[in-house]
Image: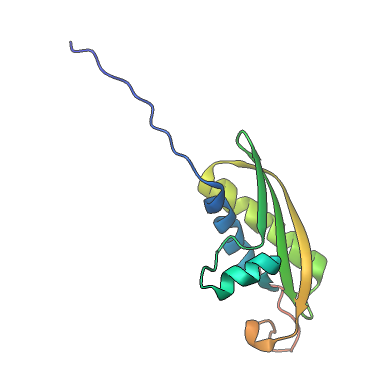
Length: 133
């Protein structure tokens, strides 16, 4: 019987990919108007290199990920509720898509958006929607 050569394939997920997953997941949550990338993020966006991971800072230790997300919330939403939904949704998406364990998701609200064209943020009664995620 011929001897089999066993090799282990490895999959590496870059910090940029994790940041992109986190940014996209955060933007899926009702009440989040934008990710805030600060001064350098604004310059990068104007130069046409908009990153889906803008507004996300992460640290990794082994398979554990710690995230800081910088967000802008739509006016009228309850900030603690939006932040809580972002934390849960981002944690779920990263753990599901990458297999990494998320130790914490810290939310930093950098502003409030008053622009109604940023997205649909009211229900029929004119109140902010509380739909999940």
